[in-house]
Length: 414
View 1 (cartoon, rainbow, N blue to C red):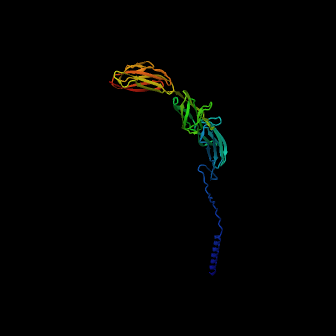
View 2 (cartoon, rainbow, N blue to C red):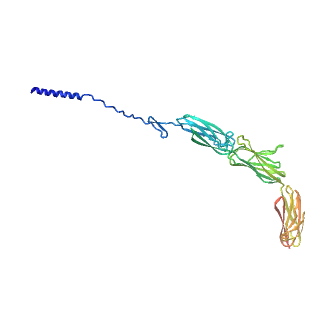
View 3 (cartoon, rainbow, N blue to C red):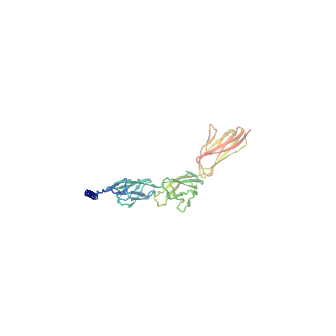
C-alpha cells in the first residue's frame, strides 16, 4: 500500500512537467500593418493649381504692366516724344507679347495721320525683364488728344492705357481804331488792340506803328520807342512784348496831332521774332483819317441906334468871319425879327426872302468863304412897340453840324 502511494505521486509529478513544456512553446509573430505618413500641407493657389503624386503645387504666372510717359502739353508744330515701358514682374515667361498704340487725331507718325495703329512685337518677356519703346509723333492740329495703348500676351488682350496730350497754339488778332476826322492842328487818339484768342502763349512779339507824314507824334501808353523820321524812313513807334498769354488782350494808345490837310492811312504791324513753333503769321491793320481844316466861324452884330424911339429905325449889322484853317461853304444866315420891331429891308452878299409864318429873314447860301474873309449883312427895322427888343442871327454851313447864334438887344421907347 505504501508503494502504491509513491507510484501515484510520481505520475502526478510527470503530468505537471509535461504541462509546463507545452506552456513555454513560441507562438508565430503577427504581421505589422503600415501606417500612412503625415505630410506638411503645401499652399495651393485658388486661381491656378495642379497636383503631382496627389500633392498640391502652385503654378507661377507672368505679371505684365505698362507705363507711358510723354508731354501733357505741347505747342503746335513741335514733336511729342513718348516712351512705353513694358515690364514682367511675375515669376514666369510672358509669351508672345504684342504692344499697340493708336495715333490720335491732330497727330501724325512720319507721313501717317490719325487712325493708324503702331505695333511692336516684343516676343517673350522673361521674369523681371523690362522693355522700353520710344517714338515721336508730329502735331498737325490743336486740341486735346488721347492715345490708347493696348497690351496682348499670347494673342490675349491684357491691358489698356490711355494718355492725353494737349496741343496748343496762339491765335492773334490785330486792329487799330480811332477818329475818322481830325481837324488841322488838333489832337487825335488811336487804340491798337492785340487779342490772343488761342490756348498757347505768343512769344517775342513786336508791334510797329508807322507815323504818317501828315501827323505829329505826341505820346503813347504804355510808352513805346519813338524813332523819328530819317531820310526816306518814316517815323515809327515800337513796342516789344516778351509774351502774350492765352485768352488775353493788350491795348496800346497813341496821341497824335494833325499837321497837314488831306486823307491819311494809319498803319500798324505785328510780328514775332521767336523760332519756337508754331510760326506766327505777321499781321497788319489800317485806319483811315481825314485831316480837315478847323471850321471856325466868328459871328457878331451891333445896332446903329440904341435906344430907339417908336416909329424910328435902327440897323442891325451882322458880321461873320472865317477864323478857321480852311474854307467854309454854303453859309446861310437866318435872322429873326423881334416883336418890338418891324422888318423894313435887308442888304447882304446874296438874295433873301422872308418866311410867311415866322417872319424870319433868310439869305441864300454864300458858296465859299476863304480863311480870313468876312461877310456883312444889314437888317433894317422900325421900332413899333416899347420894350427890350432882341434881334437873333443864326448861321449854318457845311463844315459844322450845329448852328451858330448871336443876339443883339435894343431898347425901344415912346
